[in-house]
Image (cartoon, rainbow, N blue to C red):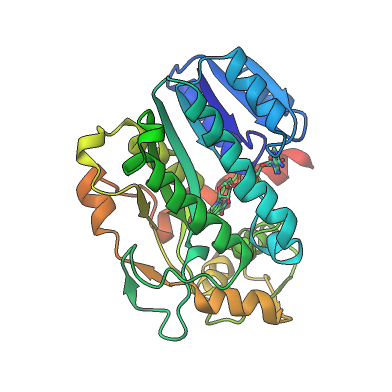
Length: 323
Ligand SMILES: NC(=O)c1ccc[n+]([C@@H]2O[C@H](COP(=O)([O-])OP(=O)(O)OC[C@H]3O[C@@H](n4cnc5c(N)ncnc54)[C@H](O)[C@@H]3O)[C@@H](O)[C@H]2O)c1
């Protein structure tokens, strides 16, 4: 059985659809909210409840022989900053509940953990290409939670005799933009919000300045990356955790691209200091040589293809159909 936590979210919904296309069966979903109708039929079973609930997690592992976990349930970066204790309980304790059950079972489990570039903190020069091992000194709650989970997942997987059955794999994502969903609670939300507003002929007030720059990718590339990483033989993977990106435009460059498609699109600024400081201390560019070498990471969508062939046409169609 395959367990996907946070199934209702942007990534979970896209992942389960892709697994279904690949004819993967025996998928179980867990989310705190009732599973969306559009994806419920792809599941063998679903559980509605809280990742913090130890009894529920025990029930899921007792009732099913779980061989793969895609752990996506989380509080995202902006919300985590305002609710740091709850963020720890969901993002760290929830993760530990899963590891505890894996430890109690003898079954070998391949575990995917969705991490983030929020684990990095660069004081200045955040436009230098960095490797996975540099600047891991998070200055935000979400990044602390993600880095700690990466470390204990790697520790149990590599060093502890308690969990020889755990095969832990993780990707640090930056902003992911999907044509199907609008994100809530992330610090990189300005990019999808700009696109959705431009397509609807609305202006947009951006909370970070025009020079702001972090890596992005589109959802189909993120999902392909997860599936490829999970299908790679363990012996080829030299690391437990990799970071990846596809393109890294500034806010101004995103605006220029949208303006070329929607000449009336107006962008205003009302800077949110906290969100700006998070973006400023995250890297703008990642050295992806490890992911390329170990499991052949290559995004299909660069900046132009992502906007011209995927995001703008699909999001435009979505709003036309709603009219
Ligand atoms: N989307 C991005 O740009 C991005 C970037 C970096 C990392 N990530 C990571 O990828 C994962 C998925 O992100 P997403 O964009 O789909 O987020 P999302 O907010 O759309 O989805 C998260 C899901 O988790 C569920 N959830 C929240 N609290 C829960 C709880 N206590 N118990 C059970 N379920 C709970 C929510 O209901 C939601 O369906 C997260 O771990 C996130 O940190 C996402």
